[in-house]
Image (tube, rainbow, N blue to C red; front, top):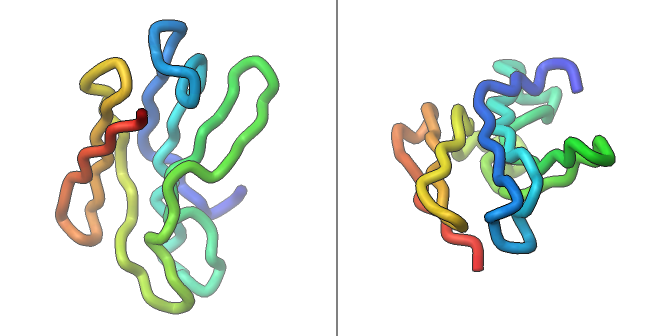
Length: 96
């Protein structure tokens, strides 16, 4: 949606495990106007169906911004990093 700001994405192809296989993970940075409550999460997007689903949330809780995802970097078959430029950290995620 508008104001969600998709900044980074990564594709998990046919070699990825089932929950990630053939999906894009997209970092939605979020609006600077937090009251819009758009973005502030990582979503999965299927290139086949066009379906978009929440994958990693919790960066915006009520009126509190805990983080703003900026990019996704695949580092293994089922491992990836998510950068957060609000908290200034990099999250390591392993999907089993």
